[in-house]
Length: 114
Length: 115
Image (cartoon, rainbow over all chains, first blue to last red; front, side):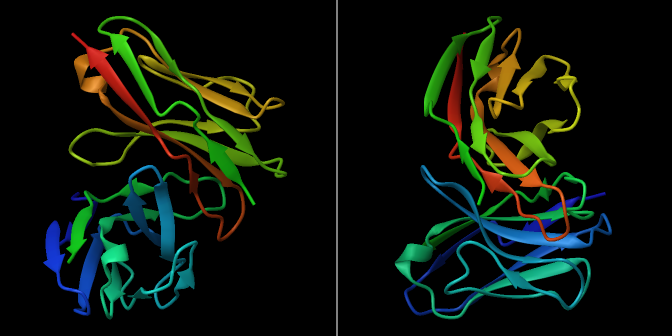
């Protein structure tokens, strides 16, 4: 089992460019999440999904869109990148949230927006 | 809304010694779960320990144990026999039970283990 994988590992963008981050999990988890990590801020939830075809906003959703067309994949899109979106992005998955199921994290994607 | 506070931004410990990392949280929920995650320099988030709030017994995983004080809303992590590989950032996190519940993280604490 690969667990949770993220593509790419590192990317540099210019302001205004767009890109998509891909998250894949092979644990048959229903729930998937996108977080961003900034220095001194911990991890903050951007968007999440409670099943195939569903998405919902988290704490900091502005400037991002997501899609969950397949159960195993969760895509995070930046339509017009801004320097404020320079961050490390983590994807995570869990069976559900009913009983505090553990979230398993991917290795992260470092994004630099110039 | 839930909040998780890790008031110590950095700590240092000598190899083989014991260290305790503090975490407090604020919630009106009665049923919830608490976690400690470790993030080494590789950036990978690794689950260290998980505690169910309705269980009186403190969770333990090898050298890692917690002191869970529900009334005080405190959830500290004790690392015994510290090893160089324990050098990492540690995050405390909270999630209430229920569908669509979200994990709330503290800001983290950087732990350095000195040889």
